Amino acid sequence: MAERYNNIIEFDEISSTNDYAMSLVRNGEVADFTVVKANFQTKGRGQVGNHWVSNKGENLLFSVIVHPHQIPANEQFIISQCVSLALCNVVSLFCKDVCIKWPNDIYVGNKKIAGILIENLLKGRLIETSIIGIGLNVNQREFEGVPNPTSLQNEAGRQFDCETLLEQFLSVFQEYYIESQKHKRRLRRKYRKNLYLLRKKHLFKDNTGEFVGKIVSVENDGKLHIRDCKRNEREYYFKEVEYIL
Ligand code: BTN
Image (cartoon, rainbow, N blue to C red):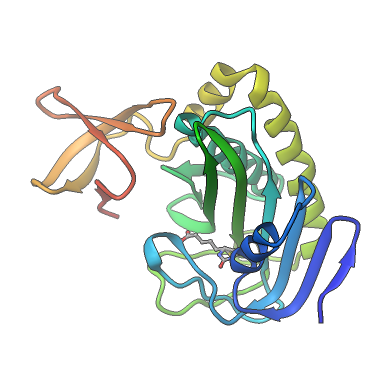
């Protein structure tokens, strides 16, 4: 049964916190920063139809609901920037070498520690509601079937309290979210500064095959620019290019 205190709705087990958040939104008004949190998800969803699998009670699994009416639909990447920077800040309290793998995976070194699934409901040219789903690997030590995972426990060598991490995230996220309304350029600069492999030679793959290039920038709408060896600038939206790890 769900327990509701402050703005947090907590489940021991649920299909997906994003799905539950979406049903709340569809059924009526939901206050900004309402959180749906679960110890276990039976149908946790990742990006592009992937599953998000997580041991029971070991990790932080939650969705935050906001209504960013002030953000135009064509700038929805701002939300992604706020969330990834906030997560980056929290993870950096305990780990070194934390960065954002475009568009919004959180990495420690070359390993993924958190994933973000943002689902926006648009109204005309504005964002009516944004459901921000986050899976942060906290106390789980072993993972199956994912390529390069890590957790706070694996990196820092100790256990963490998920409630405290959630509070830390919410407070930093709110700051970024409020700042984003006035300081879009500053936010974009911070996001860029924290990008994984920024300006480093790396092997990528697009629909023409593999190539070596360097990430040079990300546009306001999230489009990634990679400069290849022939100094051609290639541009990609999400899933149009792959990092060969
Ligand atoms: C990714 O593929 O990297 C995104 C993973 C997002 C997982 C989180 S866990 C909480 C929320 N509920 C879901 O069903 N998915 C997100």
